[in-house]
Image (cartoon, rainbow, N blue to C red; front, side, top):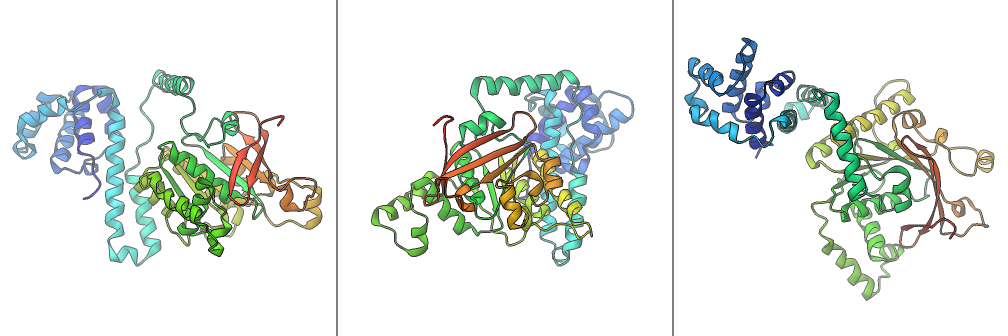
Length: 421
């Protein structure tokens, strides 16, 4: 079945006939081809023709227009046009219904493009077609007056005040600093190789999925099987090294098998990708509509072919940020520290934003940048092997911070260390 939202189409047409202001807003962006049902496209054209002629679109004027054009019977008759008014939950939400309709149109067109052998044989042409589809189906967050934005902001603040943070990272102290994982915002996690970035993201992905939220985790360093083993170790408390050697005890094997009982099929998705770019990432966003998207890592993403590599990387980071805004999800991006000389490592033992691969784009477009530092990994014998630091060096809406964590390298599990502990 092709992507469609019949109820949203009905609610949209009904709202346009009930509220002239909503109708004017919708007409700026919606087109007849956005509708899945041909009858709905014809009714929309009739509404548009009535408004263009200077009259108000209501049941009477729209029905008369359809009758005059001999299309009334084909759309279901006057009774169906009247029925559309009864399908409107809230007329003021017309722009929301329009956005849903446009999104389904976009998905249909991308799906059709993906089954066209001529397009799929030419990646450059295919991606150009997808970009054109995105532009044709784009529905901006416009049409709201200031008072409506104030109501939205107050509603969001009231939800946090009464129910707490919507999407938790699984780490309470980190949540208190950054406000949890917020929709439309980019959280970049950086650090040197082998300092636990992927394991940290696995901890977050499990925490989010166990909250009933949907997570897509695109890892370009490891395949889904490897990620699942890490998550089993974290969740079930099993030595991850035993998966490599086969030294699982009977008890560990039983606990590993119990991981499947968490029921994560509809909440945690691990697409297998050897190479990805922002177009492929958007496909997953459009398909899954997650609450959180994790991309590990920036270095392995395919960037543009321009001569200025930093600018192409910044463009990629910007596109990821905008995808999070468009699909209303929190974006998490991992990035490694660039190779630095040994004497520089001694002078700057812990990482800084400017050392990150793609630091220009990351600092510009990320709301939060967290840098991981494992002293023991850098050969510091004065620190226990379990001590990890997460330096929140950028926090657009709150304070910077240095959070101490305990990292169990056998179980790949992170836990926060209370201040003063």
